[in-house]
Image (cartoon, rainbow, N blue to C red; front, side, top):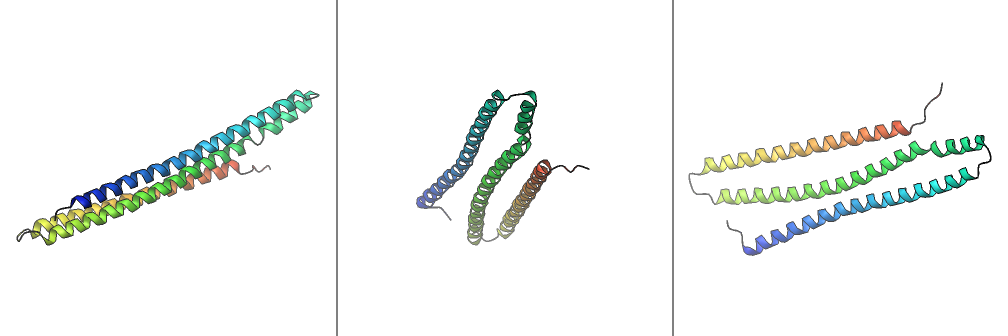
Length: 177
């Protein structure tokens, strides 16, 4: 079974669309990270300016110490919130890319399986064992691919759970006895 030039061109266009779609999703994630960093930098600069003004207006050492304490207490929580935002952006971008890649991989797998089936139907007499061997190899490759996908998903889920646990532990208020 030979592919026509139209089929090759169509497949090429679909591949180009897929690449640009994936690139677009990746850039959306980068844009979100840039926006987060700009907003965090702006907020930090504004807080630092306001804090500096307050320090300059302090009337005694006790007020100066109170201002410093009030300024530094929420920093750990702000850092944890910033890290959560980064994690959420990375997770959502990764999930979108993974979904798109899985869809494309499924399409390629289906196309390849169709090609193998069509080739097997048109195979010359006496080539049944070779066809069976190719089908077996394709089946083994499909199973291996699915196993890798499952392992990547499990690792991703575990990493996400660990990061959430660390973030929760970091931001949980300490209990005093």
